[in-house]
Image (cartoon, rainbow, N blue to C red; front, side, top):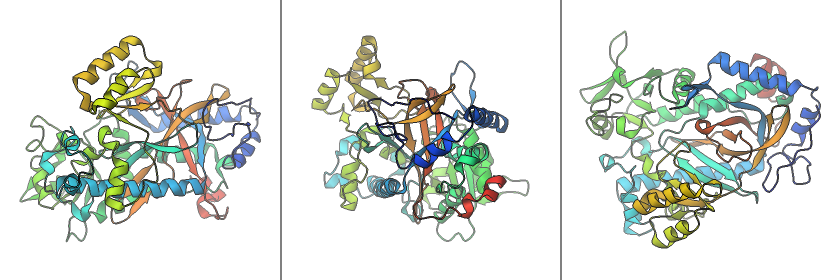
Amino acid sequence: MRLAPYQSQDCFDEMFAPDGQPRPSGKKFVERLQALTEGSLQQRQKAAEISLQNMGITFNVYGHEAGTEKVWPFDLLPRIIDAHEWEVVENGLKQRIHALNLFIDDVYNDCKIFKDKAVPEDLIRSSKTLRQQCQGYQPPQGVWCHITGVDLIRDRDGQIYVLEDNLRCPSGVSYVLENRELMKRTFAPVFQGMSVAPIEDYNEQLLKTLLDCAPEGVSDPTAVVLTPGIYNSAYFEHTFLAQQMGVELVQGTDLFVEDGYVFMKTTQGPRRVDVIYRRIDDDFLDPKCFRPDSALGVDNLMEVCHAGRVTLANAPGTGVADDKAVYAYVPQIIKYYLGEEAILPNVPTYLCSEQKQRDHVLGNLDQLVVKPTNESGGYGILMGPQSSQAERDKCADAIRANPREWIAQPMLKLSTVPTLIGDELCPRHVDLRPFVLCGKDIYVMPGGLTRVALREGSMVVNSSQGGGSKDTWILRNGHSLSDPHFSPAALEKN
């Protein structure tokens, strides 16, 4: 096929250099793309979309005018990252998760970081996601955050930044795995022999992480996935991960506490549960401990948790470390606990809780991105340069009313990746959410969820806000192209 003139202006393009030539990481892929016959790419894209629909790969959007359930949007052109760059990213993610686990444990136990005044104690204590119910809790193996999704972006200068940490119930990994399977089925001639790092062992690694963090003395632990049910936006992922790991998918009504342990109802009678991969927010976990009106949780679950007889992954209270105001201090947190500089920098961040920084934000709302500290999914954000005066006035009132709940950042120009829009390849802005597992070891999935803003000029990549996704290829250096993961036979089977 012919590639029409492709230009990504004023930002970094992941596939093409400013002179229009493919970057070294994308050169082989572009050559294979050009070898496709006219119309072949569009046919394969259509085949991928039909497969997604037939397989029921969906997500729910609350309040969406077209209905709650939508087919997962997928673009066939991958994001490609070379091995050397990925090594830096991987090391940076391991460093970050290690430090944040130490931080969460310290906040709920010894509070040394407050005594040493390395971070403002009042900022942490005022976090909405701090859970007093977790004071004194020490999770099995010392791991608070077992599964993390870290959002990364690349600015126009090519630097990769951490945009935010997701340490509560991060979602999206099932779509990463399904995107790869789709790519291998519908784009096999291009994918084959590219020496892309495999991700198919993620489910095995996830189960290992969960079982490694089972309570002490349990020789054959039982794990389950706890879902709020079919109306949750990530329900497809809950069912997918449970099925892939070979564990039960349960709701709160399937579990009960008796004699100090958690049990699951089965047709053969009660079965003890040792590890719960929970996809329910803290507030709904235990009506006796958190919200009494919760119909999703399990009475007295936290009592068993505090006694060390069940592992909750992620542990309750981890949200204190992904508060966006606390995020601003992560480089200091890394320095404090590990004595190291952060490998992956933060996006420069203004805290509206600080008078001088708040004044700067209020005086420059038309140039900044303003975010609530505890929202997710792209909700509540003011994109200053694209906003109206009325929207800025409303945001300013909200900041003045409750400054602790707002941060602001410069409007970064997210990198772009070629995306099939109609019959043309067009630049569209992307971010990347790699997934990190922390148990006895730290495992970083090679790649992650590349989210793409499908609307021209948009920087909002969230699927709930009209974004899509791409497969992410981490190229392996020094590996034989005859690797069994990438043999023709393996591709045909998949």
